[in-house]
Length: 144
Image 1 (cartoon, helix red, strand yellow):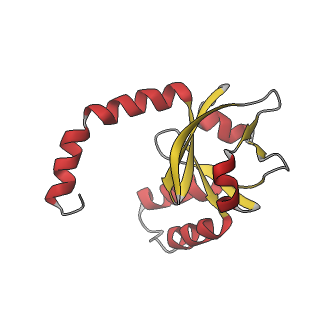
Image 2: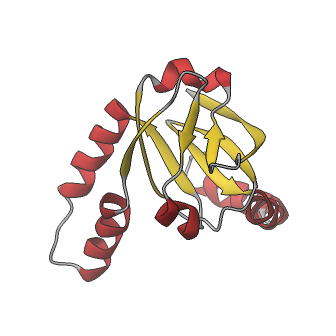
């Protein structure tokens, strides 16, 4: 399980060091793809295969479903971590997530999310502002 929030910098070669806490659980083979809210999602390969199978089973007759599946699958890249736990983030994914030098890596149960630090801070402020209302709504459906 992935939990926590860590700040890191992209190096001059646009590599990102994955926190050592997460490396063992990620294993050697990971998949990086476009996420939601201008973040990137990083999955262990086995978890990605489960996600991709569910996505590919969605009905292709609905335009919104097709678009989401394309967003997730077409943008995905198999990534290798080097001996120091660094990964090279492909340019198209850096551009999608608007990554500059300072990034935040968040653990979100079954995946890691990679955010530009400023976008993460803005997103977090917005969600924190609405936290009470969100908790009430989740409570209404028995999820909290």
